[in-house]
Length: 518
Image 1 (cartoon, one colour):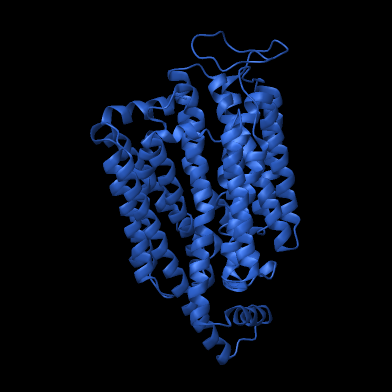
Image 2 (image 1 turned 180 degrees about the vertical axis):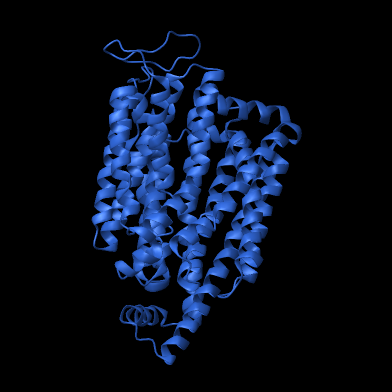
């Protein structure tokens, strides 16, 4: 059957064969798929050291692509995924995304080279960009507006919030007791369950009013961002004034300029630029980009510090981030209560600055032998508390004053901004940290190769042990600079949001309520 997205009273939904839709099982189906999408943003982080050893990756810049490839394609195609789902059919696109996700996961798990793994992660991102908006739209169709839908979206939000932490823990368990390849293989049975569940329990629906979708726009923006990230990641090796770097930056500029031109001329643009006439929307989206740029690298760098430098097991490394997730939840709860009393502007000043202070603490205090309780945990607590305030306030500001018909695209823009910002930020911070590391120890790639070989053959000599200490000092010094730059991104987000966002407490509370209600 075909169901439109009109609001208000409507009879209970039925499948095409007349069966009544089992709402609980429909929710379980889409929630499982959303959990898989959220998990994959973090599940590979704990496995990165094992992947580097298995695939002989010596450069952290190259290793960062395993994370970046997923977040870039997910963020770049997220808006397109929602538009295709509305036009073609949400269940159809949801299942297509799940199948693509499963195929890409199998390909990644079987990959024998870094290039193939990165390609698989990029395909996973496209699959996730098809699934996630489709699943959320299906929820708003299956559940009636009001208390029923609010409960369903509350479960959805809890899964989204907790998925990142669960990804780190699950990644640790799979890596330690099976293999890093299972952090990818695990998606295959989950995707199969999602497809079977969708066929059985989820009704088809589409928006009969939906316009066309902008495939050229999605390809141009994702291609441009990929070229930009590649130039940033490879700039240290190729030289910032080299033909390769300058040429790649020129390609990125051309593709992104083409994207803007396509959006201006399109009758159904991927990004309706009219939304940015609102200072609050512009401030929230730019703030989300800067927050993503500052915060994503904390997982990448600290996982390497924990496992490569300090010998944490994958499980121990995953559990080390659990307090951060709990504190984010507490911060978000406090922030949502304060939002209706003081508005988003104070939260978007204090929140990013609080998180920036946590990153700055890491940048100034992190050493190879730093204590988790004395250095890492206090820093994570500051970052998490600040992010709890920030996420709630950004969500409110991103949709405040937006026409109801544009609320979905405004919310998706915020999500896409965070993902793209994370990918760009990780590329920039990796480039900065690698530059610092190579400045201290120019032959670090060769040194790491020697140490990997010595580890494999158990042939450490006193000279190699001294070399290992030098490598650790150089790596941690580079990551420390990365944390300082990340803190600067977060501080910039506070400035941008403070200057641009002007919402009363009443407007902020109303917009957040509308967002949660769908």
